[in-house]
Amino acid sequence: MMTEKIKKQIIIQATGIGREYRIGKQVVSVLKNIDLTIYKHDFMTISGASGVGKSTLLHILGLLDEPSEGKIAFQGIEIQSLSNARKAEIRNKSIGFIFQFFHLLPEFSAMENVLLPALMRRNTTPVKELKERSKALLDKVGLSHRMKHKPSELSGGEQQRVAIARAIMNKPDVIFADEPTGNLDSKASLEIQNLLYELNDQTNQTIVIVTHNTELAAIGRRKMHMSDGSIHELE
Ligand SMILES: Nc1ncnc2c1ncn2[C@@H]1O[C@H](COP(=O)(O)OP(=O)(O)OP(=O)(O)O)[C@@H](O)[C@H]1O
Ligand SMILES: [Mg+2]
Image (cartoon, rainbow, N blue to C red; front, side):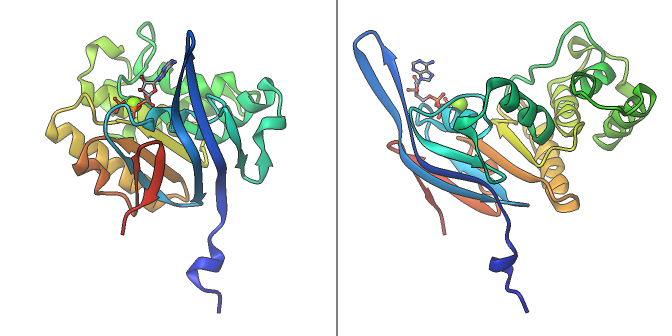
């Protein structure tokens, strides 16, 4: 019989990741030689003080930014050798993002915001079907009565639920969340936490959350902590 460990499939392998920022002549080294393996179906939280480099690391893992040193393999593909177009394709197909400030498009309704990533993707699914899916996802996050509302007509918690529906629209393999409850009150935070937990439970989706909120960090099944440009696993 295979053990749990052997069955685990690696989804992201980061090796020797370094990231520095240059401001004039000054070089600030934010990430130093970070190794991190993320497995399929992981529910990972990465905690650490403000300014430690959590967002920087998340952007590198999510292919939004490039490391100064080291390499990322995403589902076995070495990322540094790919063109920007190919990277964007992988991001659109395989990765969903949830941000602290929601980043919804203000001119569009909740339904349209959820639908957009699927329309941007080259695929043959009829628009009618995609619309049905975006409606079903809004229903899943408890917003079936808010489909036509624009972001400014929604509460913070509701906007974040729209952003979650949008993040999962293309059935990504990995969802990255950067302080997803950073702008929400405790009730809305709990709802978002439960929603992320449920998603990870019901699907095979991998979820990586970065936060300086200790309560949110505690819900991870794998808990990582960053300090001084390094990362280590807690417990
Ligand atoms: N574009 C940039 N140019 C220069 N320095 C930057 C840039 N982006 C981030 N930094 C610096 O890198 C460090 C890490 O930033 P990062 O945003 O990753 O921190 P964080 O852990 O996400 O913090 P927070 O919890 O406040 O969101 C900070 O000291 C920041 O000032
Ligand atoms: Mg940050």
